[in-house]
Structures are given as structure tokens and as C-alpha cells.
Image 1: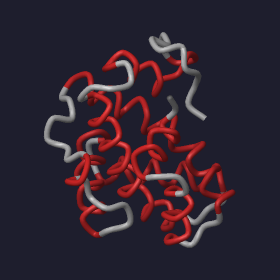
Image 2: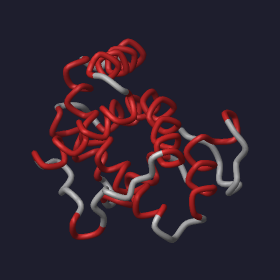
Image 3: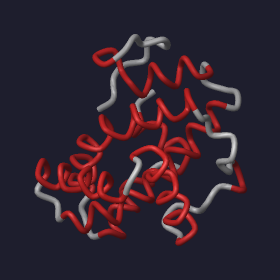
Length: 156
């Protein structure tokens, strides 16, 4: 399962477009931004899942509501854990901006929301359904970057 699919599954259909609209970008731009962010965030999230896990990440009804201030705070914490610094996060946003033409400040506003939803989705999957950690790693890393333990395709 791709990172985009995991986010949509965790937050509901249309969640990415809703979050993008709140940041001022079109659905097409959101797809382009995710196309640049997924190959960066997916492996980092998978690595974090394999080493530190997502035991403290709230799931189900306890998960932060996408688009909320709580999700922003949660996402900033996740970004700090997987990227290591605010400078690294800014660099990811700048790279995505350069590749898509979407304003870097808009992408910076999206990153915490996306990280929060992705971490919640991974924590939910890690806790049981969907093939466990191997399935999560294979789905996020895709066949081009690592063995696909689930045979479910690549990150888009």
C-alpha cells in the first residue's frame, strides 16, 4: 500500500484534497506534492517504525483530527523524529517546491498534517491488520527501493 493510500485510508477519502485546499493548493498540485514527498517521508516513516515503532501514536478515535491544530503539533513532533531537525523539514519542503512549483510556505504548512496522518495510519497498521511490519515496510519503500514484502506496488 502506498503512503498516499495509507493516508487516504486513515483520514478518509478526499482527505489529501481537503488538507491541500486548506493550504491553498489544487487537487492536482496536491498529487504532485505527494509525488515528491512520498519517496522522502515513506522510507523515513518505515525506518522509524522498524527502529522506534509507533507505540505512543494515538489511533482510532484518539487520533488527532486532520486539519486541526492538534494534528499540526503531532505532525511537527513526528517530523522531528523522522527527519531530525527543522532544517531538514525545510529542505524537504524546498525540494518539493522546486519539483512542483508549489509555494514552499504552502508545502511547509502541509508537512505536519501529512506526517501526523501517515504516522497514525502506520501505527494502526503496525498494531495488527495489513501484513504487519513487513507489509508496511514493503508498501512504503516500494519494489524499487527495497524488497516488497507484500507484493503491493510502489510509492507514487
